[in-house]
Amino acid sequence: MATIEKRTDRNGQVTYRVKVRLKGAKPQTATFRRLTDAKRWAQSTEAAIREGRHFRTAEAKRRTLAELVDRYKRDVIPHKKPQQQKDYTRQLEWWKASYGHLVLAEVTPATIAEGRDELLSGKRSPATVNRYLAALSHALSVATREWGWLEANPATKVRKCKEHRGRVRYLSDDERERLLEACRKSHNHQLYPVVLLALSTGMRQGEIMSLTWADVNLHDGWLILHETKNGERRRVPIVGPALEALRAHAKVRRLDSPLVFPGRTGKPAELRKAWVKALQKAGIEDFRFHDLRHTTASYLAMSGASPGEIAEILGHKTLAMVKRYAHLSESHTRSVLERTMGKVFGE
Image 1: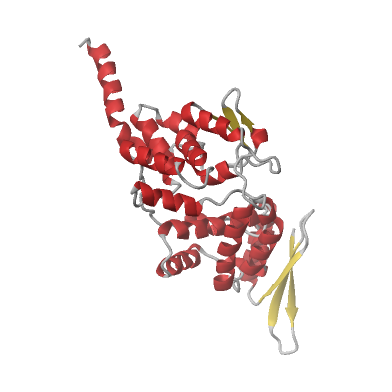
Image 2 (image 1 turned 180 degrees about the vertical axis):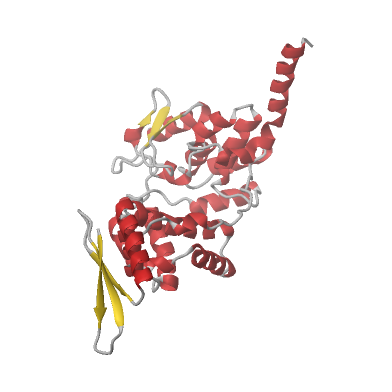
């Protein structure tokens, strides 16, 4: 309930002091020179308190973006994966350095869009800028949902940058044979099974290099990935030459490390030099280790695997990342359509 008290000072100046008291809420007061303004504020404040909007508005005018970033780094980031911790910290520190002085009420969609454009002008790629936007958006979302510092997340109204189409570089049959032969002859005996495993499963390099023997079942031909990019545990089948190579590798495994591919210091093996040398010997250009994953997906698409099957094998949560391989399965799609139409129209 609101009460309005009329006051007159020594100079005869009249003001109106408003006090809003509602059960379960802290009393709110304000002073106005006009009675109409006092009544209007009393009505809007009562409505905001009943709807739970008032205190969020007050927090947004009191808290700065720098405070939000600091609390997010303290309470949220430690629960993320190590690489995400580094990325989110770097990205949010940029926002803090550029706009940390603003109170949250001033962090509008226009402000965030200005930051987006500044990031783009700094020669960052559209995809990288989107990661900066995503980090800020998540921090603002947590502040909205859990901390009550904002009424709504302003980042949701900011347009993301249009990203370039994903790279699809895969090995031809001839390139594949040359590369595997170069890996087989490499001075690093771990390179061949690693590359063969990547080609046969589509696993990421980090997933392969962090494998432990406890996660590998050579008898039945499968392995378990506990730490994946999408955060879900995944069971991966191992078949054909990859399984044979892994069984052979197990016979000479090191007993001082649980890793399938250990380095000298107990950490995962460092294969970069051996990998680059193998590419050079095989005469393969413009090819990265991650392109082995694209190669697996491309082979699957050309063999008639559906987008859902490719996504499941590669460990994607959605089909969005698989669309880049759609053009490789056009012949399969055409044959399916021809068979279906043949049955429908009796041809």
